[in-house]
Length: 379
Ligand SMILES: *Cc1c(COP(=O)(O)O)cnc(C)c1O
Image: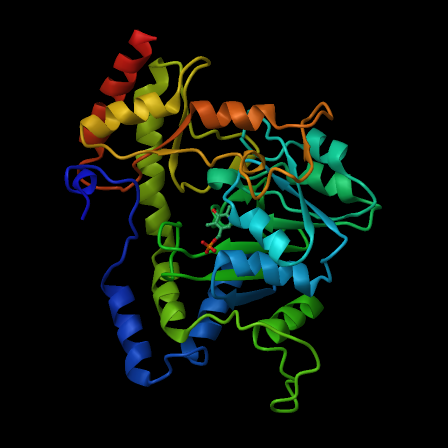
């Protein structure tokens, strides 16, 4: 363990694993079905489909390949452009590149931190075959605007819902609105299978193709006959067992986190900061606690002060178009200029706060509040 880790009193996030998880995982291991066949896989897929109110869920090994597989299954590849936000986890854009397509980065809007529809519109060309809104930090993107942009064009919407399990856009579950939605079940996500992911869709033909390609593209009727080159993107039964337990406990997992985020919001209401955005048309998923500092402040300065008293924090995602592997691709602001100024600004001022519900909630929030107030006073 590093020194900095040992001295931290409050960590950023950790999975909530209970006796039910242990019971199901033990059952999966004891059954001998430890690879990707077994009772928990189908059960987990059904549970995810139900949670998202869609017809099909296809479990895969992680959230990155969920995106990769979706793009390939839809025939998106070399020569095609795919619009992604600059402010997202690198996997959103990496998956586009792995599929052989070209990412185009667009700016964020400052209210929800999500992909700005105006910037998307400005970035569209006749080579744009997909746009991938990300429901960043659990807050749904403006899906009506996204759908309006692609209407009448040969272009689809894929939702990257990796951070937004169970969130609502108006009355619709995120993931169910585009052609397909993808999820991650990594250890720090709202619902975990250790590593894992899923693609959800209402399109039966797409679901079939996802299943075919994720499992070596083997002909379902002829063993070891592979009419195409496939992938091994399968989830294991052990992972699915963990996921089934998490799904049964999902409401309580969400509730505890929501309470913590609400308490942060209440406590910080007299400071000029914004805790998680929440538009009236949305029910965000309570993934992590985000705090946006006022103009002129720097998240990394506050972060250092928090660390000194044993509180962990994280910066927002680094805008992808500023990093070497990504900075040669096209990038677009809402005014149609090259660059993503809103994303750069959010990155400077945005900080992620510890979001592990516990009996220490009040102590945590009070300590973060005191340090934040002190930081703002100095500015
Ligand atoms: C976590 C995450 C992913 C990737 O998920 P993995 O399971 O880690 O591969 C993709 N997109 C976003 C926005 C994420 O937060």
